[in-house]
Length: 318
Length: 185
Image (cartoon, rainbow over all chains, first blue to last red; front, side, top):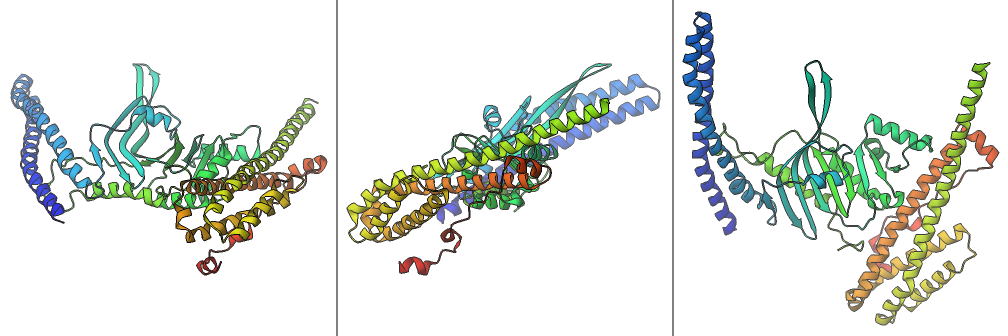
């Protein structure tokens, strides 16, 4: 109880110190924006009174001051953001689970993202950050923010045009799975293409994808398509109880989740648009709901272990 | 003329697809059943070890152990129909389940590493058999649908394919677990 109180007092002190930095950074940024606005106004006035040279020379002064200030404060802002993650987020995470370790610069490696088989497209651009690792009872788990994209290139009159498309943006959760298995089983949201593939598999055996697993839970089969090279193993993993638990978990998410069971681990991809664990710049750190969103997502990830009953170790895997 | 030839060729191809699909589904059923068989054999192999370990610690469960050994001997004797095998497995499974409950009375046995390993392997094999049964039932449903629906039913008649019954959940597994019943044993 004392240590909890102490950590709260410590956290408050850290927040007070960081709030001073935040105010300075926020005000400098605002000054920069005003200077950039002024640059534009001088330029427009110069053009309107038909003295473009005067406009250009006049606008250079606020522009240069603005750019210098911007670059100077940018380093401070980076340091402030890093301090916030290391001191505020990391210690707040301990309130959810003592074992949590926060590594803001690490993430889920790209090779692990690809080998998880959650998505069929390989990324051309891959960003990941904010890795959190922890253990609950016998199960170790980790999760991180991931943004994976692929590119398409089209030839136009002006040359090659590159477009970036998101494969996945959100949080990928991984945990040690409590059963032994040899081949991978993947559960993906039911899309039009996947439904068509499943229909062929069911009705035109010779042409369809023989890896589709038709499960007896109709709600589950309506939401997801399951793929596995071993039909029995897929059902060994996806027991009737497990399917219900996955459906319950999915109900709590805005977008349908994807799950894979591979290399004795379980991966879950949660599509999310929000970027978590970031320090606010233009709003105060001294508000009571500062970490509400961040902690609720962490708690959600932490509770998956219990929700999917991953701590029950009665199937020969310690 | 070409239209008629084209139409026949189209019907011929459709016929081949349906025929192959039926054969494929039938083979899947056979394959799924043999998977259950393999798993049952694996589970039967656990019994002698289990009985040996339990014997060392208990003097009062002889009748249960004898029953389990007898059932196992029957199940592995061969010349059994699929139904008989399934029924023996159900009886065996419930006898072992009963044994696992009575083990609660023997703390030494409960702490024995060998026994704990066997118990874990048994639970694992139970769930694997359940998965194999579900795979079999899924293959059977798929096959039954194919042979009963048009146009598969025309080919099924020619091939002599008939409906296959799905494996019913054993009566014991369907019942809700009653704590009172468990403690009365």
